[in-house]
Amino acid sequence: MDIQTTKLELLKAILDNENSEFIQRVSDFVKKEKNDFWNELSLSEQKEIKKGIEDLDNGKRISYDSFLKKIS
Image (tube, rainbow, N blue to C red; front, side):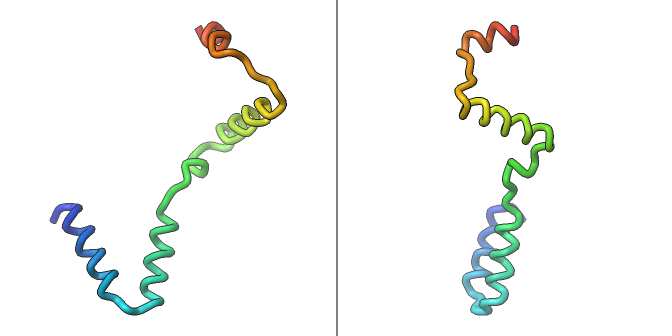
């Protein structure tokens, strides 16, 4: 069975079901399965991003050309 058929069958099962507890459990499951990319980053990556945002907020920035020279 292909993925599209499975999706349609799941959708039909949800639409045909009137049990609010079941619907809530499915909803909770779907929300839980959505991954926020932030949670997939390592702590060091999260710290680097936070520091970068803090630096920008404090006016610490460099031009794109300067950045390119720095990494070349």
